[in-house]
Image 1: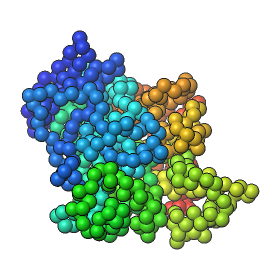
Image 2: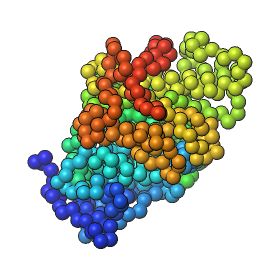
Image 3: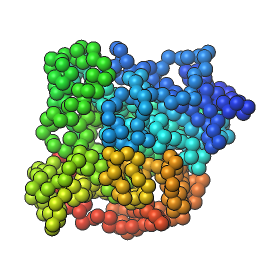
Image 4: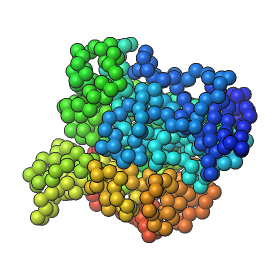
Length: 532
């Protein structure tokens, strides 16, 4: 690009003797590591530490550290969070946290240099906007960078109250959506610096899972993110959960004031609290009534609807044709809701409480939902049935609806369902209910090729390679079938009127194309309306 800053022409150095790599950035040189598969840079700062006066403020670019060389050979701490391993697998959680956490990680092919122009994949982690860690073992980029000849970037962003608290419109207030702004600043960092790592700033694929997928879709709507990426993958976004309005977000803020020992409206008092105290108040607030929409309990803290960062609910944006038209992979897993229902209900759910629990999803349609998902005869624990309701409403059917709305506006969309239950046991006892089931986030080890020492079958290895091929091909060309790899099955774009064999079904022993996945239930949910 002719207008690209001159610093992108800086020299790319490789020290083969010691396995070190030095790359120039706008802010100074960074020292990375040469592994057996990729060049690896961990914990590069893309923003000033959001601490002190910068807490609950828009992120700012970092200060230059030149002429020093920044040590990017160790992982940075994760953003503050409590009880991550209670809700996520250990492999997705940080061992150390700090409010100073705005760092990113880069992996490139071994032969990368600033003339190569490999496509760039930028990943946003999930965790309900409360947990997660971009340098987690499961997101290690050595395998995917090597397999698909891509540059992978994983990004931290402020989570929980530190990233999304909204207290009002005064100058001293916390205005919310700071985590989204962090993500955008990281995308700007990629645009300004990634060519020196061998990446092409004009070919960026933004992808994410769960809250990360929701974030991707928000950037597809936000005018501020135009031009920062050119394709996308939206994995397991719970489109059935509406974002809070500013008025609804004030209900969360009022609970936080009291739980933190502050008077309502006293932002100065909140600013005086430690990150640990803020996290404690956040955890307690999960049990406080902060919204009249019970469905918000599935995601108690997160983005709000505002004028600039997140102007519309996702499906409203699609109906109004205000979503960026970039090629998009979009899909879900078979048992998405299981982790949420079994995770929150650690005892059996008897029939009388099952019917009461149905009101969580859509109180105005209780009788219709009860008819669609009747009590199974003879069952005494109905958590599995409620999990299916959650899966269909929050994930499978709302995602089908989004796919159809996209296709209606001639937006190229590739739809998938992941339905492989791993044979290895759950990494923690808290998640034993996911054994032999395809829980939320189960596709990530296969997508990144990181099995973390677990025994896997040849079929699982093959599926992992196929997924990496589809995703990295998509980064190269905007089409999962075309790129550096030739998958066994051609994955067609999704169609609205004729969805015959248009959904990729990731399953062992071999992937396949399917049609009409839970369409009867999704036809029902489409009559209910997901966001109202």
